[in-house]
Length: 146
Image 1 (cartoon, rainbow, N blue to C red):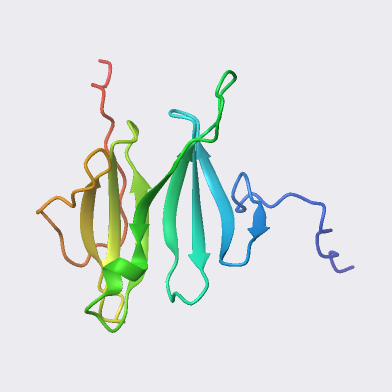
Image 2 (image 1 turned 180 degrees about the horizontal axis):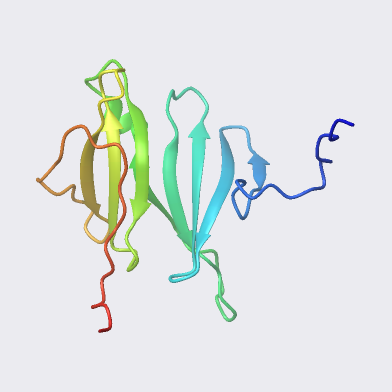
């Protein structure tokens, strides 16, 4: 007997932990994930008339906050694509302390990704890069216990 497909109400472990869609005249928001360490909501949004998505975060509202926390744009692929015919974002990983962003980008269309690191406190992209990176992970920032 064939196994029936899962019902729409069933959970999918590969789905992001939090997904919401909001429409506005000029933009669409998709909340992708939450980092429990710093209470940030990370999301991707698009703007009408622009080709590429914008990677953002916003600190979650905590009890006692009187207004919404401002959005931080982590990567605007439209800006990164200027002067290039193409861009594809590969990996996108924020460090445990939420101060650095490691990401890979391909400007060729041949899936040849270059690693970049951005300091989220200053907005500066650090000068060191690595070519042909396929995946990445941050090392622990605290010493391992013996």
